[in-house]
Image (tube, rainbow, N blue to C red; front, side):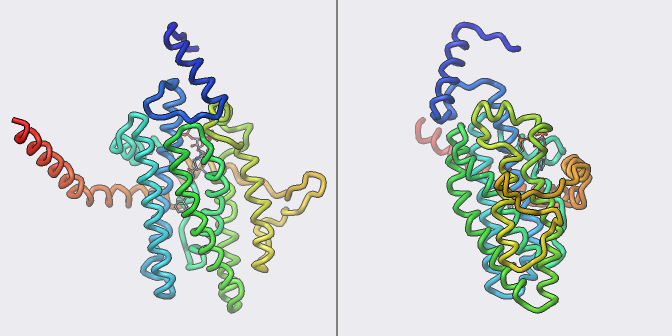
Length: 320
Ligand code: BYC
């Protein structure tokens, strides 16, 4: 265990008290090194998820079935880019640069949500992603609005509002398909079946297997456990499946009167670990595409640097 000198011990006590009093920790406040590192890990991975998450949906922008669907999808994907930007900026306030975070993503050191390593095979996947993936993200992110780090908590408020629109647009696509022709209904069923388990995996491993949970809960970075959030998502989503008139994606889903929750089957954890460790169906493709886009964007970053330098030179000239 790290030993603290007297000044640090006072800082630590003040920090602990602020956490206990539900006060936010701000970028200029003293914070334990491990708190900072853990936040950088979670927040940067969250940002990467938003950015990589644009790829599966982006795949359908040119093939959306109507102009209205195309405009809505384009706007949703742009929102995800915005979420990535708020989160990268919030993470930078902890003393890491954007390029360090991007390097970690591209070298495979940093993870991103495993769900985005699955392909979007039909238009119904766009409905299922909005409904299930954004739906799962909201369940988690609502609790993160109360996370202890101020910039992260504030970013979550706006993100949740936008995710709520995303979830509704996804459910609306599913409603239209589920009440359409037999083929459309089958497409909706298939997309839900394929996206159901990866959506449940978004909440992470069981609490008993979660490496970071106990410290993150102690620091109030996380406000609810992986399993509790997953259960909350299942409980709110099963009635929505019923309302769509689709068959359950898991035959073991059953209301448990005693627990007051739905029971459900076990996630394929072997698949989960394979995907988070780089061997999912689209991991290679996602990172390859990110690297290509990043490298094509180099001229923009170059232009920004050059503009900044000119502004700086002008300031120095004027001051002389
Ligand atoms: N996928 O100790 P644990 C969106 C990793 S995007 C990949 O439980 P923690 C959207 C975990 O990182 C919204 N990796 O970790 C965008 C850790 O590995 P490291 C995404 C996963 O952090 C576009 C290890 O497993 N939301 O809405 O306490 C279009 C052990 O796990 C996953 C967020 O990012 C996974 N599913 O809890 C549409 C929310 N699960 O770091 C929609 C913010 C676990 O030791 N993040 N791992 O290498 C969190 O709330 C938490 O980080 C998690 C995991 C609940 C995900």
